[in-house]
Amino acid sequence: MDTRRAPEGGAPTYVLTADFGTGGVKVGIVDRTSTLVAVTVEHYPLARPAPMHAEQRPSDWWSAFVRAVGDLRVRVPDLAERIGAIAFSAQMCGVVCVDGTGHPLRPAIIWLDKRAADITGTIVGGFPAFYGYNIPKAIAWLTIANGGPPRNGMDPPSKMAWVRAHEPEIWAATAKILDVRDWLVHRAVGRFVTTADTANLTWLMDTRPGREGWSERLCGFVGVPRDLLPEIVDGADVVGGLTARAAAELDLPQGVPVVAGCGDVTATALGSGAVEHGELHVCAGTSSWVGGFFPDRRVSPRHSYATVASPVRYRPLLIATQEICGGAFHWASELLAGHGGHREEDIGAFLASAAKRDLDDPLFLPWLAGERCPIDDHRLRGTLLGLRFGHTRETVIRAVIDGTVLNLCWALEVVGRERGVRHDPPLSLVGGVGQSPDFAQALADATGRTVVVSTPRFAGLIGAAAFAAPALGWAPDPLAAIRAAVRSDRREYRPDPREKRFFDLRRAEFAAARRWVVPWSRQRYAGTNGFGGGGP
Image 1 (tube, rainbow, N blue to C red):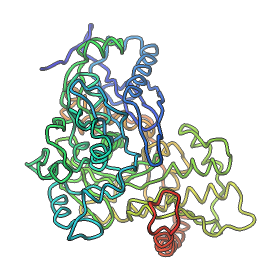
Image 2: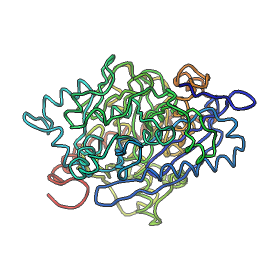
Image 3: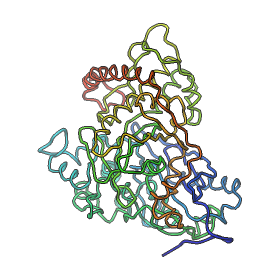
Image 4: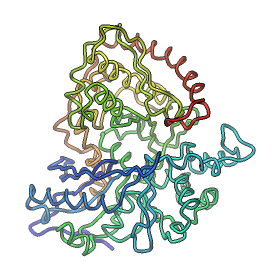
């Protein structure tokens, strides 16, 4: 069914786009030039009912969206008349168990939840094994899905197995297993769908070219019936129009087209503007990643990164995730100020108070939550080396900035060896930390590359909106919409040769410190879950 509509007085001019994160939703209005016309943010709670648990109520996501749309209607009075489509993106690797009507049967288990770490071994293990992975299963997962469930229990297969083992009555009543964005789309249009990026990270999807779809073999490994999984569609597909119920709650016209959208990683990748093959971007938020589109699948088990099938016609998107970036700044601000830490919108002021660089600065290794890439090990620990009398609050802030940048450079160096990576274009920086000129300049100095920043905190809104462009006739596909985007707020940070020489020296020190701290952490925290409590 084609639910496209033009408002009275002419063609639609706006996309309503929403990016649902861990702490809240960013909702914006984007026009056909990919310009963000207006934006608002609403927060919702995160529950920690037990150690290593992290849950949210899906109704809180929707209520926050309703509030945000209400605020935008006041600020853009003709929104209802000019809206052409709605596009969602959201946090990934969650599990929402619903009945046949889409009603959640329990709170959502979100990406941050690590309760299922102990159960992962029953899914991926078994004789013969290598590093805890059954060898035939590992080969099958790598061949079919281009990766497999990590042993930290944070990906959906382990969470599904946990529900089946610990809440059998919920499992028996489950009609569909959805991710966050999937549930929101159903709440808007009443249809159960997902996209390739979200499906790939369940590790139950066949991502081989020409065979894309749910894999019966991988579903068998995890014990998930195929009919519990939603239909996989392209991110630009119009999956329905706003239902009467959703339209009334949002005070928008019934039937407004809703596209399938994407996960937050894809939205951010598109919003970065780095959409050509081999062109990399850096996303620096609470955690961070290095990403980029490639013409074929890539995987590095050694360095814990791979491509996932994106919702742009399954185009492979490489993601190399690091556990912490802005989270280290929040930790530092709590440690130094004791006032609950900075908010995302205040990060620039906090980092601007850093001292000038000095070779006597302490060296910071930012592994406060373990690490994933280039070393996947939850036992790693953050470290401040070289403290002395005379070092100040501002010195420590400088060390934390430079340490997180050096850690990012490590990931960039590893990913940069991939065939086809382009080292000549400017490096695009997005994410909340990208609001800080000090961080952006440090990244430019350390890499020796020009760093470009444009709407960093809201790049996901721009990227998600691009999926609506084909339905509205604005562009043939989301990539074309991004290429044609107007970047009026684009800022460039060029490397300073003197600071580059400083970072070259610090990079060598950082590498030397890694060689000592990594084995120390592994020995010190051997036999623990790595998240507090217990000794060796």
